[in-house]
Image 1 (tube, rainbow, N blue to C red):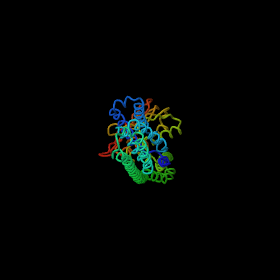
Image 2 (image 1 turned 120 degrees about the horizontal axis):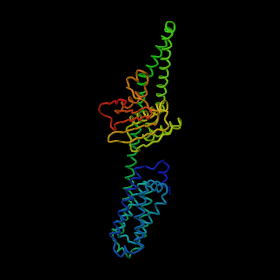
Image 3 (image 1 turned 120 degrees about the vertical axis):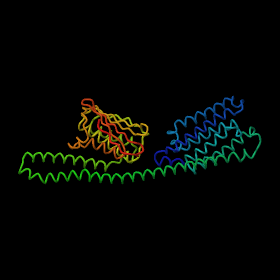
Image 4 (image 1 turned 180 degrees about the vertical axis):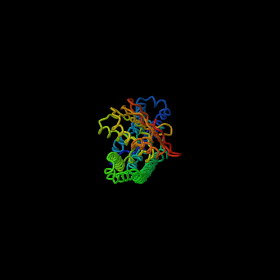
Length: 404
């Protein structure tokens, strides 16, 4: 029988299905524990009964605690689940089918429906019914006579409980499919927004820079014939502008290749930091909260800001190590990048813009797009700290912090 193979073949085990499995194991553990309180004293003091029921409580507790490992394993290997089923019926055979422990065996069919859907559930429920009647025959003296409840009523609980497990799995699968579709729609929307943004940036930054270079270059022959000093200055400014244009073009191409919107924020940040550390040889330590997961547009900007900060560290800081930290503070996402480099004396953004230094300005503009702020703190010889604060829900006026 390969009723559990589909779960393994489709990739990672669904998180929500595993959580439901854990909940059912916890319910079975509680039912078994309560059953021990309801059993007659003479049965509970029997060593075999007590040992079996304690074993079932501990087994249910262990499976609930280790569900990330156990649930996928049982889904892939149904034979393991039949062992669990026979253990439950061992207790039932000792305590009797009329005892309170019967209810805990019903959870077995529910879990089968959850893990194996219809084929596996019907197989397990049929096997449970068969074993139930075998147990009924063996414990006929304890059953207190044949009744409709013991003969037909109780066995019907197994397929009914299994149907509940199948229905629960269907709901979880439908929810996962809708969640995946929503995520894909968000990715497509974010990609469309990003293409539009890159087009605007290309027009506002790269195109203007190239136009300025073209105008300056067209006037250079005139200055060369009239004023050699002015011509040399113009040539130097053209070279600087060309370097800026090259940097802008490289950034735009990097963003076109970036796929950060398809991954979790902490994964994208760690991959960016690890790749940069490998390329530069500068040690990077990451402390990233995996629970922080903003919307796609903010995720992209956060990754782009980290990339830009690390580029500045490589070019100017002369640092030996960098620390990257991501946490959630109240309603904000806080990304902090700290280096132990040379540091610098902060200057006003307008002054940096006049001199053609657009790195810090770009950080502020990126944060500004999603309603966030950037604070840069540094002193000569004391390293630099860049703090990026982004709101979880983008709303309200956009704020732009000064470099401090």
